[in-house]
Length: 271
Image 1 (tube, rainbow, N blue to C red):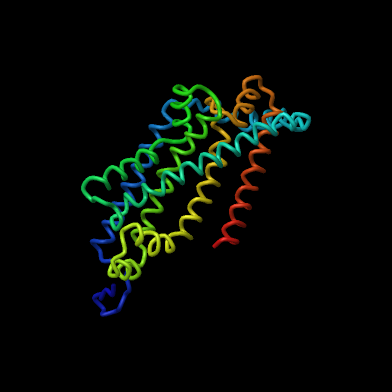
Image 2: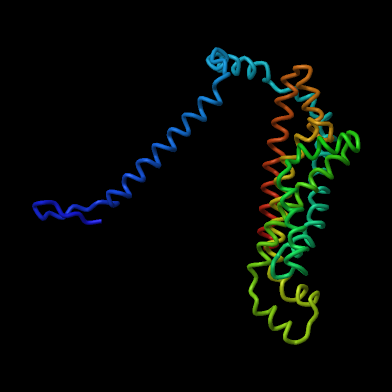
């Protein structure tokens, strides 16, 4: 905005006076709200432990190193179980999410008033509950083991994959859809020949991305008894075997890096 002074000099201002005051009050509100939240969160904090944290962290790291490399063969089977939990759970989640995405998309749902809300409810319910909570509930129902972990990963994956996929379905080019519909093609034929080819690259990318996320999430499911390397981590923590703990952490870190590199290579090769 250009503002004229009494001497008719042109002075550029970014905002009008009223807008500038509104921005100033908005910043004041945000800072005040942040301070209030900070005081609420730190009200019961014992700062003596915070001040001593660097010393404690150094002492813990000193007890962790060097890692107990002789424990590595014991971790290979739990690590393989973790990979199976992530892979099988992702596969089940993808299979279930695919039809749910078509039921949730406005352009492909049989009923906007009845079917679509049910599909959206399934998506929201799946995304609202963390994999660890799903695993905790399923361990209580099915008992400890890999099955609870696999189903927990699958339940969590449904909402993630279905949400991104139904948004991709709604954004497809409608020209092939209208052309096939004009020839008298059925709804399944339209989906098969006009919609699926358009969303297939997105579907592959979403699935690989979810698998990559599930590799990370499945590593901690053992903390609640859902199998995998998390069981070994919990056991090592319970007996304060810090050289074993750091070895497990390093192994998880290496596995996550490998899964990210592998999913990137697959995406480049397919897409």
